Structures are given as C-alpha cells and as structure tokens.
Length: 490
Image 1 (cartoon, rainbow, N blue to C red):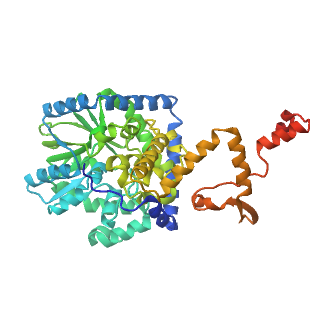
Image 2: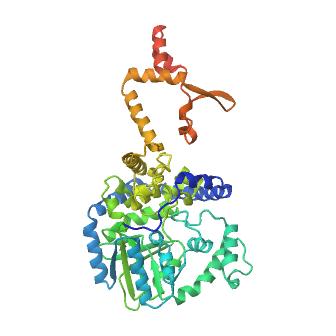
C-alpha cells in the first residue's frame, strides 16, 4: 500500500498553531455556522429524513458486503458501454495509469473536476513530474491551487479564506486582463475565475474527474457540483479519465432515489444540486469519445477487513460532520494534515495509511457525538474513534514504549478498572483523592486538583473531588433519622 499524503505532524502540535490564528477561527466560525443553519432548514422539511438515513446506511453496507460482485458487474457494464476500466492497487499505480493515458494523447495540459480522490493520490504532483499541468476548475480548488496550499474542507476547500484574501490571490496569480478593476465582491471574483478558465475548457484534450457514485448495473458514473465548471470538463474535452475509490459504488440506478435526497441537503443545505451529471460509457457524437474509469484501492480493502472501522467507507463526502464538529470549527482542516479532515478524516485516514502513520487523529475529537447525529448514512464516528484509539494504545504497548503518554494512560485505566469494580476500594480511593488534592486558584477562588494529573488536565476539565461524597451524605441522612427521599427532593 502506498499513499502520498501521510501526516508528518501530530494533530495536537498542528492544532496549537491553528488555534493561534484568530482570522482563521473567524472565517471558519462564520462559514460553518452558515452551512449548519442551511442544512437544518432543509432537513427539517423531510418527514422521512430518518428513514432516508437508514436506507442510505443499508445500501452502503450491502454494497460493502458484496463489493467484489458489484465491482465486476460495474467493470462489465462500463466496457459494454464503450468505456475502459483500470484497476489501481495504490496511489502510485493510479498516478502511473492516468499519466500514461494523458501522455498517449500528446498533451501537456489537463482540466480537472474537483476530486478528493485525486488529491488523496497526489495526482497533480505526479502529473507535474511528467511535465503535465493540471488546471483545477472548481472555484475553491482554483483558489487553493493558486495559493499553493492544501484543501482544508471536503466540500469547500477554501473555507479558511475570506473574500479579501481571495482577491489578493487572484491579483498575484492571474493574468492582468482577467483581474483588471477586480474587487472582493463574490460576483467579480467568480467573473475573474471564469475568464481565466474559459479558454482552458475549450482547448483541453483531456479532462480528469473523480466520482460521487457509480452504478454497478448500468456502468453509470455521477458527479454532483454547484458551479457547472465540472460539467464543462465532463462534456467538452474528447477524453475523460475518472478516478474513483472502490467504495463509491451503489448497486442499482434506483438507489439514486435515496442519495440524491441525502447528499445535497447534508452538504450544501440545498434541496437538490444545481448540477448533477450522469454518463454511461461513450455516446457517438455526444460528449467525450473516450472514457477511462480508474478503480482505486489504496488501503480500502484493508479498511474493509475491519468490522467496526469499515463504516468509514460508507461516507458520501457530504462534510456535514465537519460543519458540526466543535474541534474542526476551531482548528480548521490543515491541522489534520490529511486530505480528509474533520471527524471523517479522523477515522478514515488512519485506516488508509495505517494507524502508525496517523496515531494522533483518532484523538482529535471530544466524542460529543454531533457528527453521528448529522451523518446522512449513519456512520457511528464516535464508535470508530474509540476503536481506533484502542488500536493505537495497543500498538504502542506492543512496541514497549513504556515511557509514552499512551502507555501511562493505559496503566491508569487498568488501575481505575480495578478500583471501580469494588465498592470498598472505590470509597477508599475517594477518601485518598480528597486528601491528595493540590490547591490552585480557579476563577478567583481556591480550588483543588490532583497534582500528578496536572499534565492530563491541560486539555481536559477535571472537577475537584467534593468534600462529601454522595454515599457519605446518604449515610449521614440515615443516621440522623431523616427521609432520604425528602433530602433528594430538597
């Protein structure tokens, strides 16, 4: 297994930098709140929303159970419709396939539809090494490309930029004729991008896309978007190459009935996507006359083998979990050092690249459960986070890292389990904790905190041990002859 982007900096370290950027936090807070509000409005219109969520979950899980069958069915359907199917075991192989196909058509430029999968494999960088320039056509992706940055959001890659910052990026990187008199009004920014991209659409020989869904029974591939730039790529160039993770499959055309209601409401807060493009193979005289579908593994088969972790493969890339997550809202996507940020990235990335390469990501969560509540396909993200945290701890213990924080925490948890399993041990521990507290000032008052746990509490709130436990209070009430029920009510 080979993947390009393996997190080199832990989330804890990267988050400290992000939290110090007040402009970033303002940008993220405003954007995520707006998207959350829109989503809530259109979701509440649907009386059968919970039924749709359950249907989406069931379809995805059935697909994963029979993935081998559906993939072979898809391959046959695409080939019968005039397309070509390629199988890529990892990122390197996928990049080699796409590069070779572009080179066969003797062009040094390609236009691209927004695609998380091509970002995952580092396709733009691989093409650049082969002297091929990839032009991002999605407005947000274009901004990120011109700024020489990585995406910070699954749906809105430039969510961390405000319009004044975008104007400066355009002024610095686009030709003068495209930015003359440019203001930071959104319509003007879009007009500058359109002017820059229009000739690229008309002259490109090859377009590259990802895929939101592919239908096994018909060989149909689907891309949903909000701008129409994707449709320009999908219809104008004579050659189309689509790179798709093998988990993006759905069995039948009728399954779109579910996902075309779930996805737009969960992602952009719209009742339907402005542009939804379907294509099946090649149609003479209509659209691209050569179609290639690259099916990517890149760690997905390993993820599929994990009965709990495989839920991550149900993801339809709506980003609802990012927009609701209090951790993401404060740190942004770059802190995750992954193509897939936020809660879904915290459970998907460690499984794709190996937990040893992304050990901090499962801990990048408060486990509040908000992500689970909004997920349109009911991925139990908190369950998977806890599952992966246990994997990380066991891996560190196996490697005998006896001085690591994770190992020390494991020892503490075992000790707590021993104490909590016996009433007398528990009450004795309460008394010892009360004696062993260390006084400190909190909100202008003298408070108490276990001194040896001060490091653990730098990122957690730990309330002081009360002077009187509930059990002690209960016994005192009984000894005084009072009614415990009345005491509880009072």
